[in-house]
Length: 184
Image 1 (cartoon, rainbow, N blue to C red):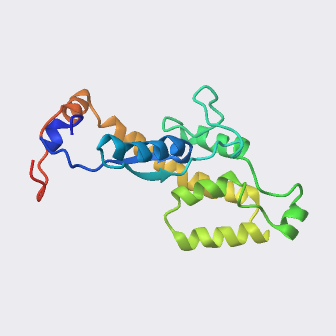
Image 2: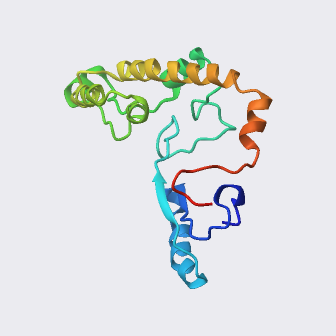
Image 3: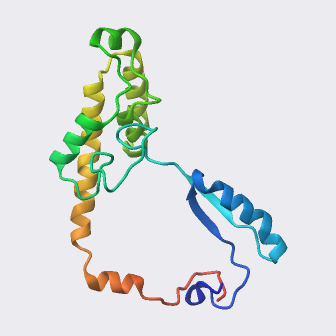
């Protein structure tokens, strides 16, 4: 590959795997159609799912709107405030209606975020059942999300403190990589 000579040497048969979001699909469909005509292999894709903005799936996250997302630099207090105040709820207008009809997990941002960050699938299934049935209220599902997100962000912040300019330079320096079974 011309792009990664230190990694792949003179090999020209290295396949390309591209992570992207679904909004990029038209461009990669075109690339897959054109690549063979140019004598190149078709790229393969891994589609990623977007995190919805805190205000709901019909809005967009923006670095210029600090209330639209949870940032990796947010404090525990900021995370709590953002989730409680800005995370769109799939709950009903009144507690009585919510208890009777349940919450809508398809639009509830706290639930959507839990699908990404809660590691315990059984607990997630229970939350889904409890929230959808009305047993769990919007404030309770938001509290659950806060308890999951705050430690993740705090751990990231602690690890980030360990990254020095020297570590970044070492990581970014082009170098030959050795892969067993891959002849360079």
